[in-house]
Length: 122
Image (tube, rainbow, N blue to C red; front, side):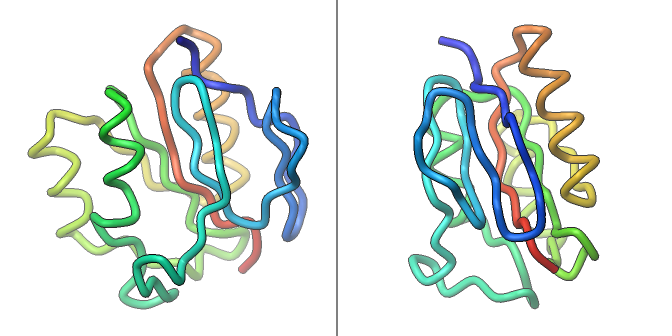
């Protein structure tokens, strides 16, 4: 199963190929996507992305996770979150969201089992 392309990104809106929903923040993985609801794990800009935010994506068997920190990179990614991924043998890219989407789409187009979490505002 391939990772779906992120077909559009603008402030507060993301669209993923094969999905009719428009996301503000989203999770993607080989074969699917869904809204990334920060309330599920109590995520805030600081301390930022927690391992719990990534568990669902990791369980899909990804080899690489791309984290989009927002258009202005307001969303933090603590070292403990990066360590969690590395301990699971997963490569991680932490980037500004527009760059993150570019990298994610490039990896997906190469057939890499890539997943990600993306913040589309600040």
